[in-house]
Length: 377
Ligand code: ATP
Ligand code: MG
Image (cartoon, rainbow, N blue to C red):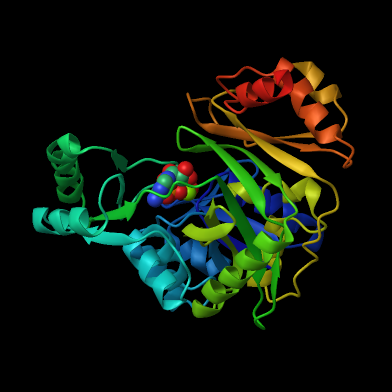
C-alpha cells in the first residue's frame, strides 16, 4: 500500500514511521512547492499533484488548510480519505460550527461576522468577554482576538476588518468566552465499516495558544461524554481515519472547542502510551484495515519541544523518556519535536517531569515552570 499525505511535516513523518512495520509506504506532497517528498529524508521524489495522485493507492492529509482545488482533484481520483467535506470543516470555523450544530454536539455560542452590523448583533447576542477567531487559516491561537471591554470594540473591528478583507471568503467567528477549568481532547479512529475506537482523554496545557504538554487521563464520566460527542461528529461526517476533538471542561461538562480531521498533537503520547499509536490507526483506517487497540498501556505525558534543536544528554539517560525529533530547521517557537515521558502509576511520572524540569530550558518548554511551581508547593 502506498499512502500519499497532503502536507510534508512531522505528522506525515510519524505516519511513515508507524506504517513501516505494516509495509504501508507513505509519501508526502508539499502543497506549497508542489514537490513530492519522502517524509523521513525530505528527499524530493517527484513533482506535481497529478503525479502524486498517480503514485498513491490512498490519499490523506496531515493538515486542514489545504486549498480546495487540491482537495477536489484528489477527490476526483476516488482515493481521498477522510472526505474533502471533513477536511474543509477542520479548516473553516463556519463549517465546523454548522457541523457541530448538525451533530447536536455542545459548543460555545457563536455568531458569524462579515460586516459591522454582524459585529453589533454578535455583541448583543454574545456579549463581552468575547473571543473572535478568523474563519479561515487559524492555528496555534493565531488569527484570534479577545474582546474584554467596550472600549476595545472599535479597535477590534479595525483589526477584524483588515483580516476579513485580506483573504477571499474570510469571516470572523465570534464566540462566547468559556471560563473553562481545563482543556481536554479526545483522539479516536473510525474505520471503513463504521467501527470507532477512541483513546483515553488527554489533558492539554497551552502556553500562549500553543500546546505545551498533554497527558493521558482516566476519568470515566468525562470519557463517556467525550466519546458520545466524538461518535456523533464522526458518524455525521461518515468519517474515515483519525479525528481529534478538543474540549473545554466546564465543571465536568464538556463543550467542543474545535475538531481536527487528522492525527493530532495531543495524540502524540499514544506512540509510547497506547497499544497502537494514532499514526498507525490512521493508516489502518484509510487503508481499510481493522483498527488496532487504543488501550492505554502506560501513563504518559507528551511535552512539545519549541524552537530548540538540542537537548542535554541527561534527558537521553532518563528511563521512560522518548525523544522524537521532526528534523526541521530551528526557528523561534516552532514545534521541533516532542518528548514522551512514561511512568508506572506510583507517582513516577510526576517525579520524572520534575526531574526533566531541572534539565530543560523554560523558553523551549513553557510547561516546565508550571511543574517547578507544582513541585515547590
Ligand atoms: P490549535 O489549532 O493550535 O488547536 P487554534 O488556533 O485552532 O489552535 P483554538 O483551539 O480555537 O485555536 O483556540 C486556541 C486556544 O484559545 C484554546 O486552546 C483555548 O485555550 C483558547 N480559547 C479558544 N476559544 C475560547 C473560548 N471561546 N473561550 C475561552 N478560551 C478560548
Ligand atoms: Mg485548538
